[in-house]
Length: 366
Image (cartoon, rainbow, N blue to C red; front, side, top):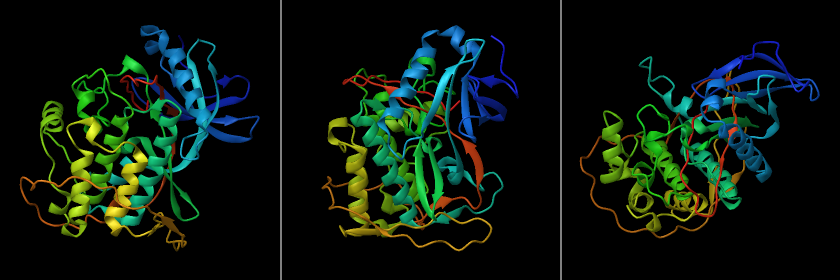
């Protein structure tokens, strides 16, 4: 199959402009949509991947169509889909302005600059919106199963953070447990995914959300290792340090919450992403009813716009936690790492369709 190039037209409406992102599985293009009169993002599967696994084409489309039918505001919207003249399947999605949560977390890490931080309320807004998207997908029989900060895109909605969830769930094409398979997702995979359990379901997404919540509150991942094998062992066998080890201000309620979230038995954890998010809000606010939503960091020195408080429910009880292994210096873990500035990124959604048993699957952005 020949690869598309700039100027290639798809279905008479999409004209490819330039490559926005690419990887081993697909290429994401910026495209002009003639009928809509606006730019969209077009994701085209690589020809060699389709040749290697012909069933990938149908799964690619079916998963995206199913996700788009959920119609949730925190899920990336599907515009159209089809196949190229060479037979490669493609999807077009809304184009978003902003930055992935992963990019915000990593800003400044390579240059040695201190990482910028945003308020705790920003972190809670991101987590709550991600939980809403996951709950909607799970209720529709969809699971992500490769959730990570790279799959959460944060845009600016009138000065407040607005999350869009995207990602791929293309079965056996990419194995996230293999070193290099899905490196961005590996630190967020549940133990049952890593050991290859047959009963992996949407609960794995709740685990991944808990890992992100821990990271946003403490600046540290709960499980780490020098390489993929060490990370595997840590996730499957170790108990993470209590969040209050890094920030004493987080308190015992937050510690207890993460003890439950990272329970060895999946049945002992939170039953849904929403339940986890609600419990976190209550644990951080002492059960108060509101949490002020902080604005997205503004560009070019603009003043942030005020936003209304977000309701928060009562705390879900959690078991007691054991002492952390090694104390660390307290940090202002109530404020999450963020970016100063914005980039244009196109994102594509493709959640895996799941049966009631929700078998394991995973994928990468491109």
